[in-house]
Length: 223
Figure (tube, rainbow, N blue to C red):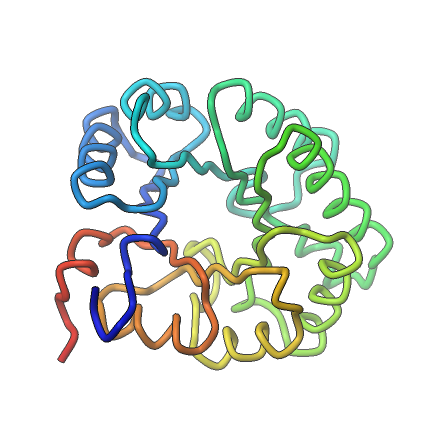
């Protein structure tokens, strides 16, 4: 526990690089078990492997859908969700259609988010909607928050970490201001040390997507 915060319970230990290998998945799963991290977040290809490695532990398995660009067709995203759940995923981090947002096609955006949310929640799983805030203005972020409230998503997540600016304190605070407590916030993208992690949590984040989960719970970069 650091500054009264149990960081272990708030970390999704993440590896989503395109050249991720089996040995990388083995490493983060071992780390997650050893340091009692909340979840691992792995590419869809590796969900089955993570499920096998983490069987019998309390570590959850998260994966990504429509990642990282978000503009794949809604039925394709729904099919990805079903496959990921069949493979053992507990949580689905789904990317919104940024092209539709920028085109002002809010009906499409709402339907896309609703379809993905229903696909996950109907099977008892958690959905985290990735906004990619670094590519959006505050008016667009606010509109997405309104949609997420209506749809009743589980989490709103800041970023993929692949496009635009990652999580910032200002964005997390804005999300918290525009979301009810029933919708949690996941800050992701560019969180590299304990000091940054604590700032995100104090700003309102409930979960952190990080590749340096072990260093963060060890207190690296706290000063």
